[in-house]
Length: 115
Length: 111
Image (cartoon, rainbow over all chains, first blue to last red; front, side, top):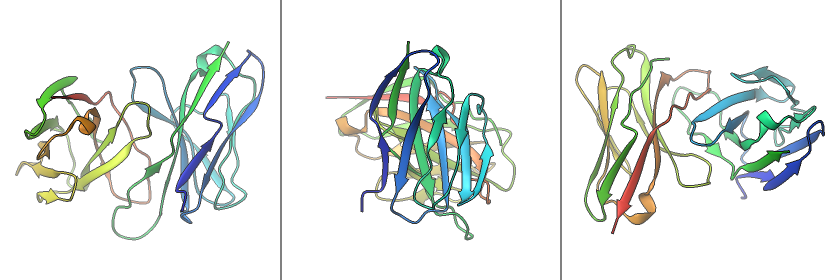
């Protein structure tokens, strides 16, 4: 049981390049989400998904796309990287539904630098 | 979701209890208090949550005042590995799983 995995761990891009950050989980969680964390700041929600085929925008969605074709995977795509997207990106998952709160599990993060 | 206020930083001696305050004076009746922590460079980790009763688990205790306008997270015997940023989050426990992180409290445990 690997939990939540993110790849790559580190990435350097040039302005204008595109790339996909990968997030995978083996806990059969319906809910998955992406956050970014800028230096000295709290996490901000980018996009989230409540199940395969369903995605929605969070607080800071501009410049990012997501899709959810399987329960296990929730990739985050940067369409045209900008220096303002330099950040640490975290994926989080939880078992949705039910009457009690389910803790969210976070991945180890991807550290992205855009030059 | 109700806004929370936490001190930006605090120190604690190893082996002593660490008491982390959180003010949430505008909390609504159906909003829970959640605590997460983030150890340097890692993803946040869930600690504990509560509605109005005090809660305890293997990691910490959560004390919520009777009027629910503030709470305290207690790490009973702080270790160096408890050095982290601690986030107090208030939100409704529903099908909306979005978490709103503020700046949190940076806790430094000293030997």
